[in-house]
Amino acid sequence: MIKTREQYMNAFIAKARPHFAKIGAPIPEKVRASIGFTSKGLRSNRIGECWDSRSSGDATFEMFIVPSIDDPKRVCGILTHELVHAAVGLEAGHGSAFRKVATKLGLEGKMTATTEGEKWHA
Image 1 (tube, rainbow, N blue to C red):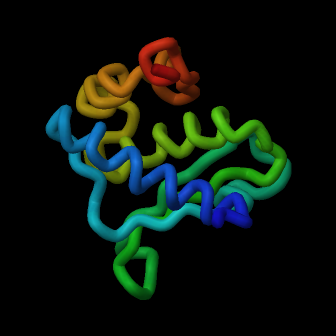
Image 2 (spheres, one colour; image 1 turned 60 degrees about the horizontal axis):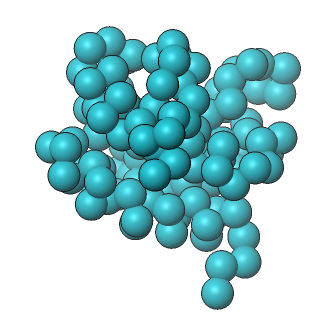
């Protein structure tokens, strides 16, 4: 039984893996999602962040979603965005490699601030 948002997000990651793999952008084996503030802090407008696996003691990509987002679909949409960063590599930024994967997964809009489109919801 899922009791926390972290459990919910990590369950989402497990279900997202086949979708990422299907489009040739597998999610790295070691990823973890948490609720927390981004590196810019409370007053920042960032709502999610992906930290490189080199930042973690156990070589895990760390995803953070701010606690003020409480709609589960929006949380998972933000998490999808952060997982794209892990899948294509943080050095890709929000460039063409990021865009290609994000749009195939149904994310829309400006790549620095994507939203969940109809394809994502399907």
